Image (cartoon, rainbow, N blue to C red; front, side, top):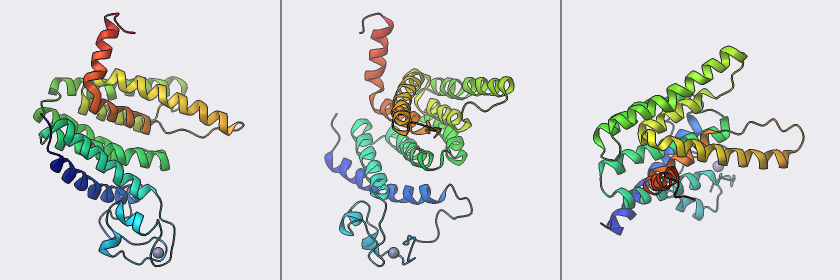
Length: 263
Ligand SMILES: [Zn+2]
């Protein structure tokens, strides 16, 4: 079954619009005193509010050449990138899952992961206000979606969160230091709830592998005194996104591997 290209395009545009809302969430969520909804979009330097044509996802950034039209302040490329990422994810969802409950659910999942990636890069935190409701929503999603059973979701949630949480707690008790990020554990529980326990071996392996690789490269470039913590949330999130779209291929390769037929 091939999805109508018109439907994919419309959903991609919808994704870009949601992406521009996610930009506001990313900007204001780490500062709880700021409202997510108010005030309306404005330039952070000259405070002039944006005309509607300066607020079109992706396109406005290109028309304005990345500058505020009033004070010419440089606008971060992060804004169009988040909008573009959400547009592409939306198009990919509609292409892969058609007009379905799965597309609607994974749309929320992808939006949450995108926000977590950017906030974790900037602030080294994964907000509980996203991961905790995300765990509950993931389980509720499994009750409606044919892509994951509620049993797989429940086991995924418990394995992703509970076991790692126990290990981290034990670690703190024994060593009196906080070794594992609590935010990462809640994120992995959320991923397990949305994608089922079958996703966890891939997500843990792919995120650890890519995270270590980037960590080694960062250490090499920073040389001495490199104690900068590399946030793990983006690696977990990206691995979860890959699994969302390629679960069949990934599980097939795992199946071959367990049977000794690969590599
Ligand atoms: Zn300005």
